Amino acid sequence: MERTLQKAVVLGSGVMGAAIAAHLANAGLSVTMLDRKIGGQRLAQTALEQLPRQKPSPLYSKRVLERIRAGSFEEDLTAVGEADWVIEAIVEQLEAKQELLAEVEKHWKTGTIVSSNTSGISIAAMSRQTGESFRRYFMGTHFFNPPRYMKLVELIPTEETDPEAVAAVKRFCESRLGKRVVLAKDTPNFIANRIGTYGLLVTMHEMAKHGLSVSAVDALTGPVLGRPKSATFRTLDMVGLDTFVHVANNVHRQASDPEEKAAFEVPAVMKEMLQNGQIGEKAGRGFYQVV
Ligand code: NAD
Image (cartoon, rainbow, N blue to C red; front, side, top):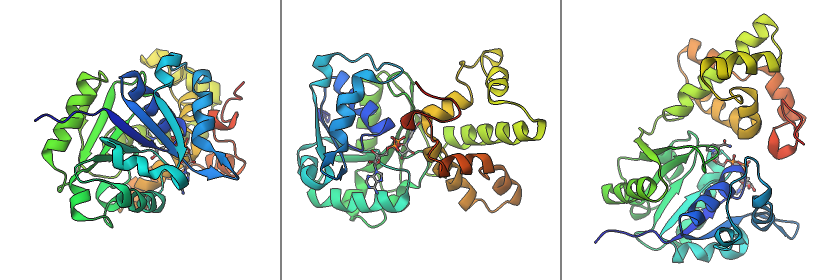
């Protein structure tokens, strides 16, 4: 019998978690979105309230957003036991993801699909400490930002992932979310981010060499190349510099070839911006001031 996906749990309510939750709710799923509870404040509740004000507008009606219930990791992880699909979308750090998956496994019921929205951390490494039966239903499902508009989903099974579970997610993404699914190997940053991160960093290294401004680079790498206006720095602001640095470091750390290592070195200016909390749209300031 074909598997149906009706109830989802999204772990993380940041840039991607909240947008994925809304995208799934729009496809008719009932969604529980969980995040941390900090100082009595449930981050997922705040994110849910902010969804209608997001830019670009996610275009989701009140009725769609009513399908999302917000909760916290601390109080509501039992929702995992009721779900057909659990999507992890927390910070791009291996240890944080491993820790959360260990908690998820305690509430998980056999057969439920669990996937990670990681930009490029090894799926096998992330699930290494979980049990064999959990790993059979674990894979990467990499949505792109903003998920409401971006067609591509990279699907990353490990050698242990059950082909039936992979087929079910692929079918769902194509038929219910209207995505194009690409199967990727579990290599650092998979396919799109391996190329995309490289391109962005080359652009930044060239910018420093030639003394170009942010707006000059966006003008040179935008519509004239058949790409959106937001080609380089507006994209970085939307992604979040903190997330981008984690993604670039993921390849940098693992590169053995010195040339590759140098190419994935994060420029000093970006490290400085990170230290100053100038991390893009989610902080209200990045390369551009966000109003
Ligand atoms: P974000 O910074 O907007 O949100 C991260 C969320 O993780 C926050 O809600 C935070 O509360 C939570 N968090 C932080 N530390 C945690 C911890 N130790 N334990 C549990 N939760 C913690 O990040 P994002 O941009 O939504 O990225 C989420 C995932 O999606 C990452 O794996 C990222 O690589 C991936 N991704 C991001 C983009 C993008 O454009 N931003 C695109 C595709 C994939």
